Length: 105
Image (cartoon, rainbow, N blue to C red; front, top):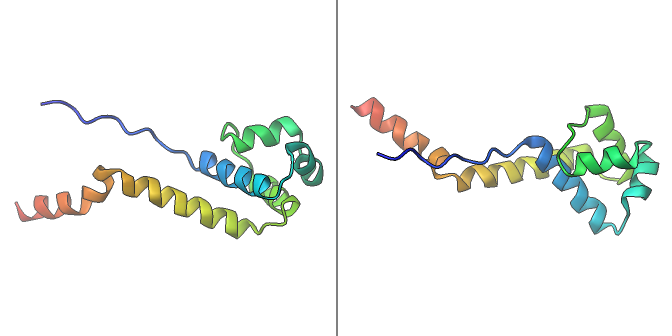
């Protein structure tokens, strides 16, 4: 019996960074513009957008303010993206059925 293919773990910081980058690009703004407005280094903002650094809540609030975007919107987008990833993983969506079969046995 073969073992299941490992799932690539999606990190919340990657999804938050993706949401921030999408918002910045949608606004037609550069990393330099947003980093200056958020008072964060350009390199650090770039790492946050690429999901390489996990930003503190204070830093996220500052970036969102620079983007004129409520933090709740970014977190909601991130939540929706995570739900989409989880629904694509059949092992996650199959868990209730597996638990029901185990309980019935």
